Length: 193
Image (tube, rainbow, N blue to C red; front, top):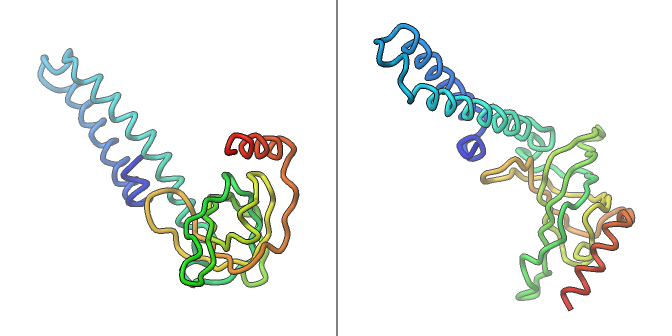
């Protein structure tokens, strides 16, 4: 899984193929090999390890392939501006305080719902990370549906996020959060006091 998350879907394919080849080799040696290999305790352990590598490697490979071929990830290569509708999955975190006349910034993990790229609106999914001015963004709660004009850039690093979204102003539209998120936000605020 770690190899797939760090090196991408191609590395997962190589890893899964290698694990399958080792499993076939182990089974072949066990069936046709010397008598001592037929009852050796290492064989089931090797087969179990290969099965785990194949399962987790395939899952990581599929997730990475989705992230690599996502329409927003492809738009990120061009650094396009898009209209995106997303839902935060966590509270905004201050990542840069106002220094030297600059605006404070927040970091906001989110899940995409819809994007409009070059006039084409698509229902999309995928994890993104949003960077935005703290003003207008720092009070958002998880689960609120937010629409904003953002610049898309490539996600660098390990993980299955499809892109980084950078907003330069207030959100265009913000729907109220679900009732349970409002309640949870109030509890967090009271605990923080």
